[in-house]
Image 1 (tube, chains in turn purple, orange):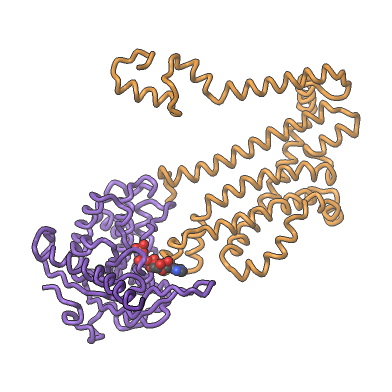
Image 2: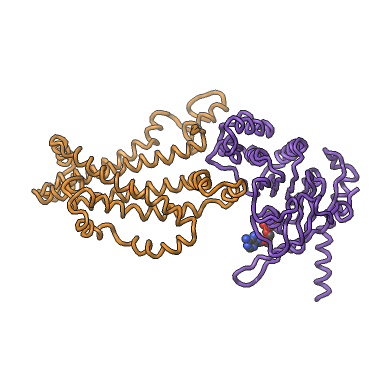
Length: 274
Length: 288
Ligand SMILES: Nc1ncnc2c1ncn2[C@@H]1O[C@H](COP(=O)(O)OP(=O)(O)OP(=O)(O)O)[C@@H](O)[C@H]1O
Ligand SMILES: [Mg+2]
């Protein structure tokens, strides 16, 4: 049912993976010389059209990892491959949705969604933009400015802007983190509906285990800082997933345990040292 | 609850909020309250008190030269009748417009460059910081040497006074553009010029406009000083000429009043421009 990725995904077959993270290490050096080790030996394989969630405790290095995968930051060691080519920087074929929100306040919804389409002909662009505005449920707000929208609506604009660019991969860094509980639930459902239509490859970072199990084909569990891949859980349950089902609860426990176990072993090794 | 006697408590509460946004006590007589709280009465009172005090002090001192408020009023009338007021106002505004516009054309692009490129910043910063503290007044002798007694001298001085604040505020505006916006631009593969026109300029516009408003105030300060020395027209010239030609202090003060009012007006206009830009973002005035 839920297997570690090593047994489940063809991680040694480079040709299959849409996104491959190969032995990535990251250390931030501070001026005082106290280095912060954030990532250690991270390996992840993502298949074409797969929905991957990366969970981990706050501050463990999720944003750092996704930035490296997206090409916004260089790793200290290791490499990221997209379609077997090494990533050297961001690319319109891989659109990033940022944790802090990045719709442009000086553009209307329509202009924001069409931001990546400036090389398309006008009529074609308008059709694309309208299509994605409808898809994220923002019809009637085409001429609105972000300041007039709620937080959830702004996130929809971000998603529509990313989809309109027709990327192969979408990276999402806690896109619903700033939203209230009910809006978050609705956004998850909508995101899944949209994803089923397009089957884009998605890497979705969150610190909420339930969000990850609800959304993902596979959940990658990171440990505390310095983060390593603690566990990969394949979620073979049909969507929408029943949070009261035995499998769901068991999966939830395993993930919690994976984060908890790392804590316990940490304490144990400290005890042993002392 | 309220003395207005509205029976429905819900409408009463809403009504109170509408009349009294600051949330004080319920309002008894709406009209008087509006007048009391409005931005009309209090400023009017303060200004009247100022004029009365001024008048009283001049009367008490028995000064022959220093004008009373009413003398200034008649002085203004005299200037209007002679056609000098309009001529001098136009002359001063003409110089400010040119000097300020040139400063914007040079200062905004160059400031954006300084804010964007660390190399440009490092290369130019020492020179800029050394030039910036030199008062435009100190440049007057050089301005006369280079441009003589002509419009070019005050325009040059206004340019000097305006260009540094514009440079500095534009550079600061670029530095405060949130990194996410730049990353989105990078992600969507924008070219360098697209980045400037589609992200940097709109993102920095609010801050640049504020910088321009403050700088226009400085420019207006400087035109008066420049006109006192380098030309034979304008409001600054009016002031110095009224004193030198016949100790006409009523005309001196009349000139000062006009300078103050026009400076105020310029500031209001710039605020309007700022407000318009903010409105556009918030309420969708189309620009397609
Ligand atoms: N530019 C940087 N320079 C130095 N240290 C950094 C930098 N960015 C992040 N860090 C450190 O790296 C660690 C991981 O940060 P990161 O933002 O990747 O965590 P995160 O898992 O995304 O956290 P959150 O769940 O709060 O978003 C943190 O301890 C942070 O202090
Ligand atoms: Mg983060």
